[in-house]
Image (cartoon, rainbow, N blue to C red):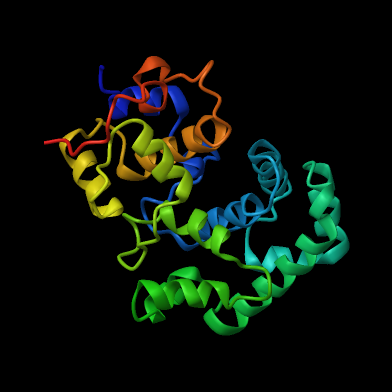
Length: 240
């Protein structure tokens, strides 16, 4: 059985969602980080990823990608943007939550998520502070947001999504007895792809897990016969 390479995985599935949206997190710019936070909030609902991304782009098209702009736009304006992006199923509740979240962010941290990170004592405190914003930040949104900040914020250490784990196990990237996150980071460090980072690798696994592994869509999977799910005789193993 031929091992899938990280390069093939990323080339096939795509990398970071933030990069796909034109958001550059590499410089830890507060404006860019908030844009990703907004996108993560939209992606955190039980809605198609393409709809969430289209809705974020609608916010961007209208220039409503900063806390002050969200507050100024108001509830009716936010509902209009959400509907235009195809987010109609959650438009009322999301508009309410966005206003509550940004009000807390402005009041507690001056609208700057970098300040929130600086005030956090450790990764757990960081996650709790994020969930403490308004009434609409759950575990899924926090995980989406923080996983693309692993190399930007030193306290960003979210657990791997179950979808990432499932995809990594199907591709034999992990062994049964390994601590998943450090093991996957070690795997990446030995097989880095030029111009890409661990966050791209993790996002590609997430995409594979969500679009194929979770649905058991083996037919048509871009990884083809190189997935252990297709061969019950293949056991997960530690790679040296």
